Amino acid sequence: MKKIAALVCLLLTLASGVGPSCQVPVFRFALERWPADRFQLLVSSRGPLEEEVGKAIASLRRALEADANEINVDLEEVDLNQLSEAERISHPALDHAGESPSLILMPPASWKTEDPVWIGAATAQNLMRLLDSPLRQRCGDALVKGASAVWVLIECGDVEKDRRARELLEAGVKRAAEKLELPEGIIRREDLNKDYSNIDPDNILRSDVPLHISFTTETVLRDDPAEDIFLTMLVEPEALELNEPLIVPVFGRGRTFGGLAASQSSVERIVGASEYLCGACSCQVKEGNPGYDLLIRRNWDAILEIEEITPESDIIQEALDVVTFEPEEETEPAEEASAGRNATLLWVALGGAGLMAGVGYLRFRNSAAA
Image 1 (cartoon, rainbow, N blue to C red):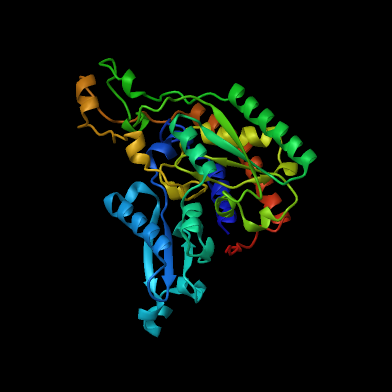
Image 2 (image 1 turned 30 degrees about the horizontal axis):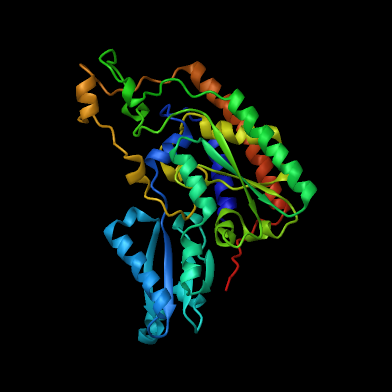
């Protein structure tokens, strides 16, 4: 369901033909200005938890109380023995609770589903695998260093298929890096000077992360035990059952708009998706853009040292003599260029939507892991 919603949003976004309201590319706008959607983690038990997992849960709670942005998850502990029948009915997620202590991860509202992301036994090891993984850390590291996107290849185990998928992905990101350019009008904070007299603050970057078009790739085995929970967030469970390598972009603060089976992908589609990510942000409202968020243990604001830019910001007051903060109106040629780009991306999105229909992505189903 999350993937269908993301593609519908992508189709609507790209088909609208609305000119960009700011020149900051989508990948950088998402990194600096879109807080990661929050998951809900329910820990159910009958009576006290065992010592090891109890300590792990208490540690997570302390971390969240110290800084809720430590990880994009809200924690709730429920003792089923203490609940009335009415209280239990009012909490639908508890329908998935077992008699033994359980971890129930519920998705953000933006996923448009009430099904759990993952259900498993409440153990310290499962909690660690649920909250973080090596692949998530590598993606996060690349994104805060300035990667436009991390392209993840989920291998299927078929040596020849995986080899062709790796070659395709490398060719696609190489072509995208060579072909794409940043939008004009982006203002790096270090470039502000007294020559500016009429700027749109939305075009000013909010962090010192290097700005350039670059892509990194990551490969993960489908049966990697360290990544099995994360993979159920990254793609639909049905997709993981296919004997196909899957290609998935991750950008912003751990956001994706879904993946494609490598056999249905192409260099042009990879370039097209990269073009959307590197193009000027046409809708600053997060919900108006395609994609859904992933659970990644990373305090993005603290790492990026985000500074919101307003007319009163020190960086503005120190650098400029006169600032009107009135963005210039879009010109007709710019709108036409944007419409042309959107038409190309619409073809890419339609291809992805058709594939998903073909492989049975029309229903969101979650798997439980012990």
